[in-house]
Image: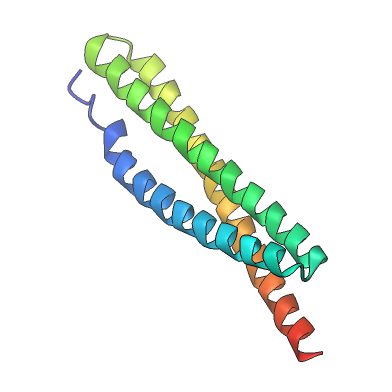
Length: 123
């Protein structure tokens, strides 16, 4: 019971990841809308829609991780189920890592897509 707050200490960091990912999603969504209105670069729009889906996947994993961290704290604080709380926290951390891996994949792809856009503009 004395360590019930430990899983909650990770939540602010995840909150910052969620905030930055939300900002990326809004910017990407606006860029896609602009490209659709101009009816240009259909292939590039397709790539960017895949990127938007990847960001959404990362967000889902981060949201679920936060939920499991909060559940872990409640389990640890209200009940004497330390092992269950530990497993719940570990599961939340695994979900967080999957979300972060999705964001890393997004970053690499975003650079590749941006380079392709610049090459297309130069040609």
